[in-house]
Length: 380
Image (cartoon, rainbow, N blue to C red; front, top):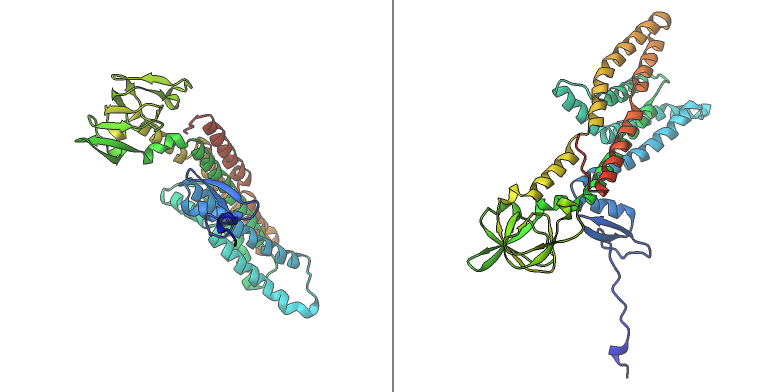
């Protein structure tokens, strides 16, 4: 007779945090919203971060999704454009060759709608504010190339530049993704400073304990802090002895001894003792809450480098438009409209600040992330 208690029972397979399918031998592991999660593939990790991550994670995930879809469409646009450039169709395939420009137009329209949407929205916001930005220049160049190419398709012309539209939008989307990824990385590094937004405290009333959001606690109330918990309010110790890690404020690694009558600051980490505190200031006015607001504002505020790029674009766009018009007039007088329009289009497309579109976000992302890893918050 078999003793079932001695029969080994196989452990239940670990499941993907997103699709709930069994994990393979080398799962993708990511920290999302402070929790370590395992995924069966990179696609599931991206989708999970997009749905459940911090505010900055979905922003980076959204840019990455647009970048991936845009890259897929761009590969098809490049391939079919190459067939037209090298005249790869035989004489008997003339009807097929005539359909390729229409296919390119459809693919480019889809790419412009999906990838170019954020830039169009940014340009519209800038126009409503009666100013010009880097988005305005991107949309101007991409829309000019798209419009001219569409006109060529309708009239049966051969000068189609949908591949140019593709590259301009993809390069700037890559820049946006790098910047968003840097901000998300900075938020992960600054998580202790941002935790005040969702901190809770144990409020003592009439001998009973209740959990309440730290921002709703008022001065004069009594709260209890368990060993190992982070203190979420500024206050004075009424009972208990412990050591508190105040490195979030002072940078000192050595814990400070606390006893009755000693002041404690929000954001400190309680040691091994139980503390009873009297709140000295309202929860939303504590040091930790103020620091959290400052960090959030610094992360969401547009950097000085980004503002400089927009100011440069505001000065640059009128000059580009004047130069494009002058180019069209010059070549129109010499070679006619057929030669003038491509020349003017070339000016608009070449003027797109692709170098700034990549360099500025990349520098911002790296700077924010490196500073955050050292506990430094950059603003402006």
